[in-house]
Image (spheres, rainbow, N blue to C red):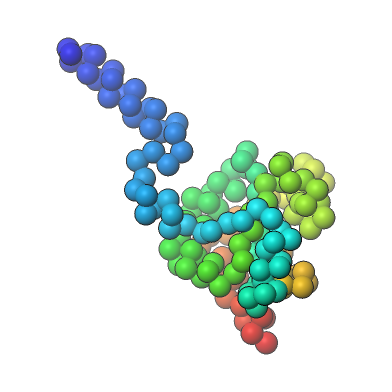
Length: 153
């Protein structure tokens, strides 16, 4: 293989890897994140059974602030660890629009409060907090801690 063909091949591999989700990540990196479920009713039942609060992430694949939350906040090791004290539910507002509407978690283009937004609830469905917009890891950790304090009272 000549030098030009070799360079073209390497560049093609790099571009392909950038296009494939998870390419180049170790298995442990992929499995070390927050364990999201996509059924809010199941989440509420688990929360009621386990005495944990529910953390619902309303998001969309086209939403840049949602990607920022995923890349910086939800991938933060401290956030991941603290999320174990919650039942974590992720709702894609495009795929589960009725659920998003029911819990006022929809994107503003659909008449909702905007995304990303996180709904914190008790297992009985009572709202504890419902912040809207991007939160950096430190602010999000403080928010999670405050929700856990409410649950302990």
